[in-house]
Structure formats: C-alpha cells, structure tokens
Amino acid sequence: MEGIQHELFMREALKEAEKARELDEVPIGAVVVRDGEIIGRGHNLRESTRNATMHAEMVAIQEANEQLANWRLEECDLYVTVEPCVMCGGAIIWSRMRTVYFGAHDPKGGAAGSLLNVLEDDRFNHTATVYSGLLAEESQRLLKDFFRELRKRKKQKNGEHA
Ligand SMILES: [Zn+2]
Image 1 (cartoon, rainbow, N blue to C red):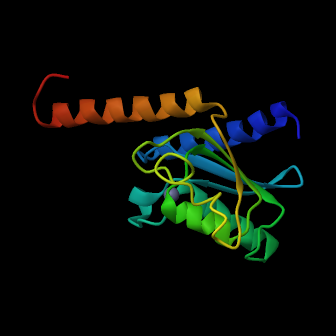
Image 2: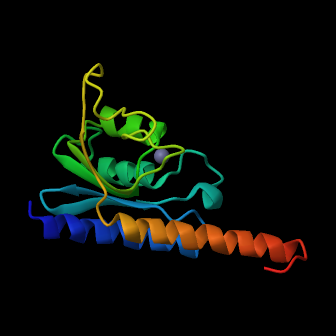
C-alpha cells in the first residue's frame, strides 16, 4: 500500500479522535481496515460508558468482528492515533490482526514499543507488525490541547486564575 493511503486511514482515525474530544473524552481514535476498506471505527468512550475497557481500539475491533461476523481479523490492519496499551495489544493479537500503524508514542502506557512490545513478542502464538509515528504530530497536538483545556477548567473550578 502506498504511503498516502496509510495517511488517509490515519486521518480517519484522527476524525474518530476528534469525536472523542467533542464528548470530553481523551481524544484517541482508531479504524480497522480490510482490503482497503474501513470495517470498524472507534473512539475512546471510557467516560461516556463508564467502562474501563472502552478504548478506541476495542470499540473498532468489536465493530470489525460484527461486520465480518468473525472474531478473526487476519487480513486486517489497525490505524490508531496513539500507541496501544496492554489491553488493546492483547485484543489485537488475539484477533490475529496483521499490522498496526500508530501515531504518537505513549511513554506511560504504550505496549507497542514504549514500555514493552506485546505485539511483536514471538513468544505469543501470533504477532502483528508495528509501524509508529504516522501523523504523530497531529495526534500529539489533539492530546496536548485536550489536557491543557482540562487543566484550565480545573483551575477555574477551583477559583484560581487560568
Ligand atoms: Zn487501550
């Protein structure tokens, strides 16, 4: 696949992240792609659903499973704006995905290279290839703006000046 196509799918993941931001959720988005077609989309819904497992990747994987009526996502690739955590890394390998493209690294929770790499550990019976840094600046900017806004609002709530 051409680089431009990867960027296109990452832009779709960024659109999902934007939807999360509109819901006051940490802005992370993901899409699952098979044969050049998006079969699953998701954004972080942890707060709205009060469910710790509702990460963007989990939502996108569940939608792809439903779409294919199959838990196996063997020919599928995941595009996600931020490096997957251990939970999502687990879901990615257990659904047998092929490749993961992520944007920004997560130095405090990343399980695709930062803290550990569950996706490419061949002690597991399945591995997924990882590519990082795709449109990382855009993903990073969304996160930064979100947390800056959050701090500002907290300060205002506490009666301090922003
Ligand atoms: Zn996760």
